[in-house]
Image (cartoon, rainbow, N blue to C red):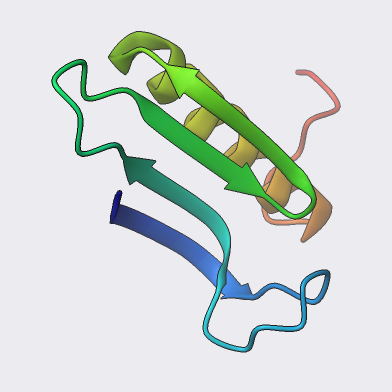
Length: 74
């Protein structure tokens, strides 16, 4: 599996200083499925479109928690 995208900083939940808070990985299999990891959440065997949505949701959630995005509506 190869890491294709990282966003954020060190992951405080697993103790590894080199892990990114949000990570997108692609499996080295014929089906080339994806894995999205965000904190303790890990979603596996995602298709391209599922991984794209999950990655976007994770990034938006992270940015809202950091008060960068206003998720309160209009």
